[in-house]
Image 1 (cartoon, one colour):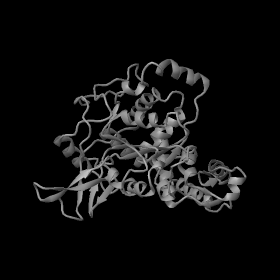
Image 2 (image 1 turned 30 degrees about the vertical axis):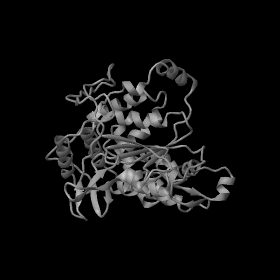
Image 3 (image 1 turned 135 degrees about the vertical axis):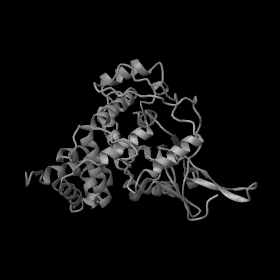
Image 4 (image 1 turned 135 degrees about the horizontal axis):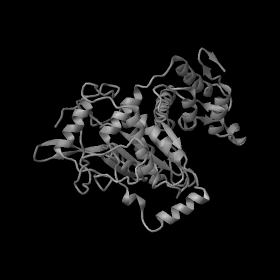
Length: 394
């Protein structure tokens, strides 16, 4: 038992799958393979052992305060391998979410930016399927939370229980101690329970009874919510929304995609056949690689000008925060990596601006009356703020 105030790394037990672990994964350089199956676990959870706990602790020690991996311990991953690995994950997810490549792109950008994703849409369009497919594509500990009005903060973070044999309290970790945390209908939980995610999403740690427990890397929260059926729900506070790197809406599929989905998915659940194509250690290496991509001073200044412009519009009551600027640059780095570049260009900022900025804006009553959306506001800002072009702007 640790003393109060001590920072501790915790590995939590999770439901055990079939016990097999990934022994070798090949990432081809010529596109998606015909067969995406690999030797690995057949479920969303991996068995936890003393060895895995030691490995997770060692991996954490190899990172500094920003999560940068020690290059002496692990070789630097190349952009070619990053691109091939991400393509495998994308192809895996698209087996479940048919006809939505743009949605999958935003989800992967959020993953590589080491951020959190809020999926907001009407029922039945695949919100939970997207979250579960992304989680199952990575062979690492995954937990799922069904947010309900009676859910307590301790049901999320864990609780200290008195152990009679040891005559002391021991910490029982909650579902948040996983690499991927899938939260269904997050707005159905009370604000008190929602606030249990604030610390872990921002600082990658949990504090219970004065003791701080560090979370593993990578760590990603994928939450869903239904914006239409608002009875019995609690709107996410701005502090909670601001911690989500990106928000996306899946939308209805087109006729061809819906027909293909009927043909392929009507007889079987594609999630049950999904196999991992990567693992947590590889994903963390991808994240570390993305973090090192070059951002020119002009591009950084452009990102600052974009977020600052959201605070100066009369139709915006609350603009984007400085955290939004940081998340915008991180997401732009991930977008540049997906494009195979070692540097960020203004087009990368444009590609991620709407999913990163729109959900952080609070519009005035007049803007709502005029049927102006936050997405419209971000598009107007992108069209109005001058784009840097070398030493000039255009």
